[in-house]
Image (cartoon, rainbow, N blue to C red; front, top):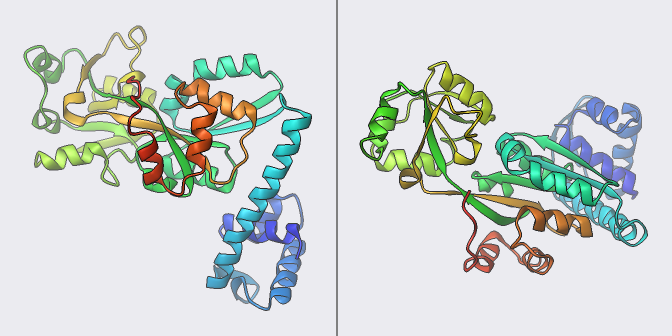
Length: 327
């Protein structure tokens, strides 16, 4: 059994059983991967992948267990390398962050600017995506950190740490009826539900607090457009496509002065942004520093303590008495 063989079966699984795509991503040959996978199966005496002719069709039950363990082994190998680099090159390395457009555009620029200034020899790479994509990148090891909000069921295999709360605003053009109504009284769910809505992708799925608020009020939101980018959503609000429901921190007083932003925290409450990493990951010193720069209450000791806990409930209990900032 070789580490190379374990890497091959993991990558084949990650590439939806497409051996050709796996070979391309690993810069090797398709026959070479197929041969090594067969050799591993022969050595173990079981099939990791089901087949139809020359094509892989599914991962067997035993194969899935082997792939899960292989993932852990490969993660430990990377941790061994990280330990060595921590002692030989403490200020050098790479940091991959997977996050949403809103976090990348409005929450991270200042943090990243300070980090790069402090660690000029660490190459930092940012990947943007949906909650599902962000989770997948972190779980596969393609990203060191996942930074996201909501849809936390995606992140069961990660240690997720609370960073800050953020509120939402309804965004409309100045002549919109809701802009006029907001000058008279606070908006109600029924007021918003009377108009077409534009909001974030997945904003009304998986029982988000938005969906819960509308359901509790007996309203069915008419979502006519979704996007991952707050800037894109604001563009379509300007076009009159619908009422925007966005993160308040995504409203720029200067750039968006042609729009009216109405605070609706009394309707939807606040959301919580979290930063997460794979369980068992060895965090480099600069990784701890990045976390603390992003969320000052997340000190190295507290992060290490959270990483030692078994599940999300225990992590939540650890932070129950810590007051998070509101953005």
